[in-house]
Image 1 (cartoon, rainbow, N blue to C red):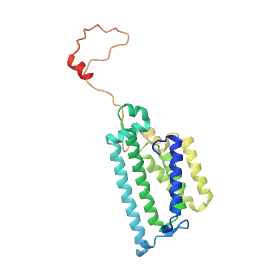
Image 2 (cartoon, rainbow, N blue to C red):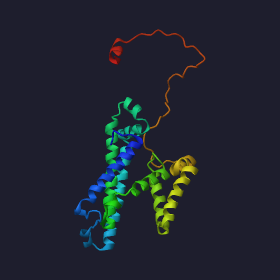
Image 3 (spheres, one colour):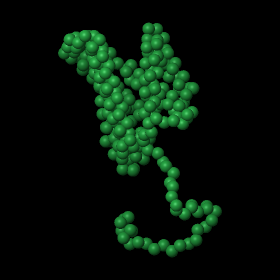
Image 4 (cartoon, rainbow, N blue to C red):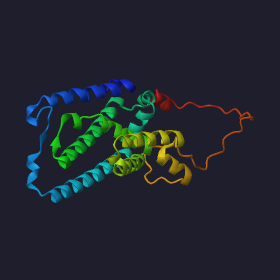
Length: 247
């Protein structure tokens, strides 16, 4: 899959997910296509089980966010963002593109797998067609597009918007899906920089600065020459050791 790019990568991973869903559906150990209940967790009272699941999810989410933040502030994180911006330019600077993509893919799969496990622990029922449904991918894309693509804070805002709409209009049936679609289209048309990009542009705040940026050079060196002036010719003395080292 990592050899694919763009839309081919999206379609390829979608096909892999569908193949895995079919394999799980053929496994009678999890009920096949009809699903199976997680009876092993019935030993806990419903209130206790919900509390355990909530705190486990909150703790895991906090740790995963901390891991992602630490990664983004490390040299590996700068390499990942360089790969995101331009793979060929990153490779020309010595960044190992294949390794970076594998790290990003595994980290994303780890987070999604843990989220799936915690979801099953909350619902107490495994249904392959439901847990492998494309709606999970659509929800994640909604959070990223609404909150802010390529930012750390943006997906958190997008998740808050998503769950606010979900809990506020989930009982409206098809209107709930129409509301999600209208929200995504509205943000795309009215807020081109997404929610967090609009906040940064309006109030110039950035809670978690990550990544790399170009800084202005400060020093006491001589000022840059005026383009209209011709600098005086200066003799050039080559340093043999430096020439040999550069070579």
